[in-house]
Length: 347
Ligand code: NAP
Image (cartoon, rainbow, N blue to C red; front, side, top):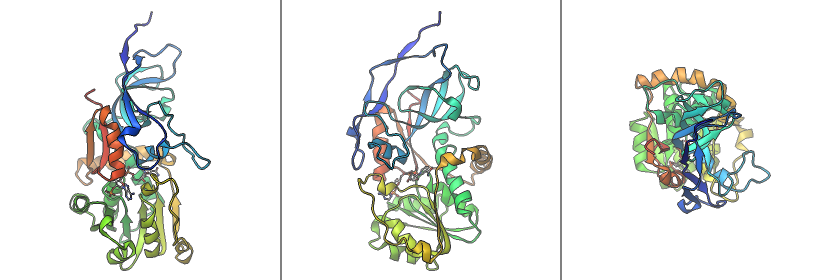
């Protein structure tokens, strides 16, 4: 007879659908319920102990009820959130995974999760870098920056690159990839401390605080008197509208995300969209999931860069599932400096 080992399983649940900015009170940590640490014999999945959870911006769109335009499945109120994380396999009934292995991929915001389709998980093979990096530079945001910059933007040496949300998980990497590619790079961020960070630590040529610029068009003209070749779009809204006026002919815009719109019930309109026609701009949305097959190539590129100090990354780690809701709030208030992570490693 299989040994029965039941433990309590703390979870961070969404209390109800969210409107506007997420608040800590929209979520709750519940301790009810236990989980058996041995999977049933007929399972084909894996049971994991979650170690790090990524407070990613895309979790906010999942907090509202799905509408006709949604391509993602919303969270269910009363159930734990789910998103990218790093975990250790506790039990496996899948031939490709063994107890004790480390993985990153989609998991639950809880202590233990049963993952029924582990084929989507990536194994972690390198232990000379912090494990939390697999929520950021070595995980989904890193691959997002790599695929978006090198494949969607196709940069050329000397081109002029603008990046919004430049101090965040994706933006900080895109800026450093652009510098490695011989581009001129300017970022926009929401505080003076982030201006200093992207210039001094990540080596951007320049940066500005968009919250202190009453006229974004004028600000962009100051930093790009000859225009922008590549805009790496992470925020949307008024910034995108101003960027459109400042793109060069045949410029490219990689639309990675639009965080300024995620907390609005009605998205803002873009008034300068005709610039796409006048300037023959290529504007392309993309999703990292379409580039998963590049992951191993990306790791071969990024690991030596990390080890040799050619690329830096900054993380912002809070401890414990009880801080999970706060971590998500911080991302939408711009309080995170670098990749916002929740550590469960000590739980
Ligand atoms: P992040 O930059 O680490 O954190 C979000 C940052 O966005 C905040 O720190 C804040 O920085 C800024 N922000 C928040 N609200 C804003 C607003 N209303 N206007 C302007 N800036 C605002 O997040 P990330 O993980 O790197 O993600 C950045 C973007 O990439 C998001 O839009 C996300 O959805 C997208 N993304 C897309 C994919 C994909 O596959 N397409 C994958 C990953 C991420 P400031 O202090 O500078 O304002």
